[in-house]
Amino acid sequence: MAEVVLTNVTKIYPGNVKAVDNISLTIQDREFVVLVGPSGCGKSTTLRMVAGLEDISDGEIRIGERVVNGVAPKDRDIAMVFQNYALYPHMTVYKNMAFGLLLRRRYGAWDNPLGFLFAHGLWRKARAERQEIDRRVHEAADILGITPLLNRRPKALSGGQRQRVAVGRAIVRNPKAFLFDEPLSNLDAKLRIGMRAEIKRLHRRVQTTTIYVTHDQEEAMTLGDRVVVMKDGLIQQCDTPYEVYERPTNRFVAGFVGTPPMNFFEGRLLQEGDRLVFDEGDNRLTVSPRHRAVLAGHVGRTLTLGVRPEMLHPTGEARTDSALRVQVSVVEPLGDRTDVYAGTPRHPHIVCRVDSQTRVPENSAAVLAVDMERVHFFEAGENGRNLTRG
Ligand code: ADP
Image (cartoon, rainbow, N blue to C red; front, side, top):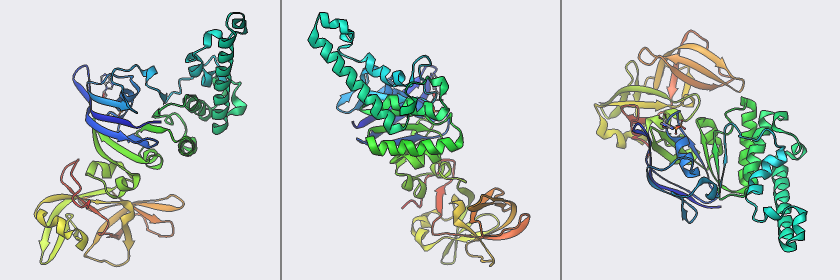
């Protein structure tokens, strides 16, 4: 096990495509870090540079004590699990899991009992090595619950079972770090959630340093000790899932994390007597005392107000100081909760999450109270900085 440290790492592909732009990141020993972001943000390239499958254009990558910039992938002591599993179709599950270790044997040449004729000591060492491989394969199979499948070939396995074998192959190596590249993307939704929990349990058990790439923010949030949100080859935020959700650094992160996504309102910040108000266009919302000091310098400016769906509450009262008058279009009951789609003339796509007992009729006018204590204010623009992060 080991720490993985990226220092000012840049990757420029031919054609001057800057896929990764001067990123620095320390993944601590035993930590589970998830790289997440939209397609093309540079997360796979980052992982592949750690694996040694892509050269680094600039910067340094260290695994444990060793700078690995010039080290071949096979010598980096890492194990990678790919999206397509990359199992050998003609080998049994056992062979698939053992294969990497068999290739690395030191006494492999003496594995044949006839070796005894030449060098009894070497043959004994080879046998001990083989027994150790067998022990590791059975242990990994036991951890993953695939012992009954050891004699099958991949084509006789379901997607989830293949995924387990691919993970098993990584475990037996007992590497310094696991690298996962979208390992669950090929599974159906239900299986994905099941495998997600398994990967988490597995990490709790083996505690190997893990870097995991996904485009699925929910997967990132549920798996990571820390989540690294990337965009355009840059790290936008690297924090615990809680921090990323509750204290996003900018509008991009705020909108990327959470389902349904955060609602954004463009508007102006105004001073009205001793109150600060946010003018949404058709509604005026009073800024909570909590945010007043930090926003005082922004009066007169256009800002973006960010409100998560669960911070909006349908209310009977037409409260004017922190409520939006909306027209409800669609109501989606999801069983344990209900998503209500609504809009104001200026902001036609608002989503509000309510508990399943709350009845909101479609095609009706409603008033949504805004929990102004918990909202965020961002500078204008797609990547606007969160002014109220604290
Ligand atoms: P992600 O994994 O976040 O979807 P990638 O790391 O695969 O993103 O790609 C980052 C950027 O680098 C993208 O713009 C992509 O088109 C580009 N890219 C990836 N691989 C290559 C390559 N081999 N040659 C040129 N450009 C590439």
